[in-house]
Length: 463
Image (cartoon, rainbow, N blue to C red; front, side, top):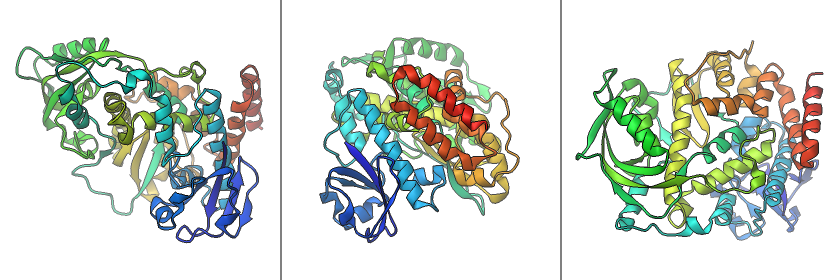
């Protein structure tokens, strides 16, 4: 499938603009009729304008968020808002290589859907994932999974600092989504009841003091997690005020939450007083992916990172989970918010206000005088700052402080080529986009030649 990008001058009319197909040099167009019908065109049109212009009836034209990360977000991330021709060329190259990587792994989506992740999800839905839950409690589990699923974490009882703007700090996609997709997930359709021998157990932290029995209960839950996935009734009875601002239970959820997955319960117990009731458990295991996905690799490809983000979003999409994998969706979203919460905690420790986080992105409010400090912190954490901030930061330095981040995730991030590229070129951010494109092209080369090509690209950046 050929992929192109069209950046219209005005999204409310969608007439003139810049087009590029498969990374070619962008060309000027005066009408949407100049978009070839044998190419799928990703546009910068918000969905409202896309629908208003009746473009949803044109199968080869899609809106700005077709590949999950919106054109606006990628524009800010890459700092190409002032050069729409360059933006069209760079993004069409990334998107084309993303599709090529997917197809080389046997994932072929011939007919574009409302979102790429929806078509991708149908490709990934194995026979196991399509089966309904079995056991005496099958009918109850849908509500349990619904109350355990939360896509976005929102701020609570916190004010936006005066004069601050919100910026998205992004985790390196390849490292982050590989790590999440490598965790344990529910892997069976038979669910059984699990109780703790009492109506509920109360554990966690209150007023900075660990409650009696917490250590033993957490050890038992961690032991259970080795072989089982589980969802339990949960009531958060109190929470450390510091954490409540950015990590309050249920803040950002579409439903009132009464259940949580095992991983989320363990995280909440570190800063909350919680009451855990009975629940349900099933066997857990790894998700199945094409062998060539190489879930342990250190990522160098921006486009392959985008593919892993879309794979994550396909499993984590509420539009698919009702039919196929609601228990996996609940676990996936929990892992995501748990991981993001550690980075949010680091920002909060330095008195930056965290607005929200989800899908490997942490929104942080930053005032002009705080730019250098927040960029230094982000790069030290392994996050990728938006290019607008990198361009104005002064004296960027990466420290080696040990932040409270899951060790394996931290290791994956530190070894990620894109993270290393951002850190290495932080003082020369104008070189970053060209470097990302050069590294990304290596993904289409034969595997045996990639290491040599990648070394050559990295060496050229030192000149």
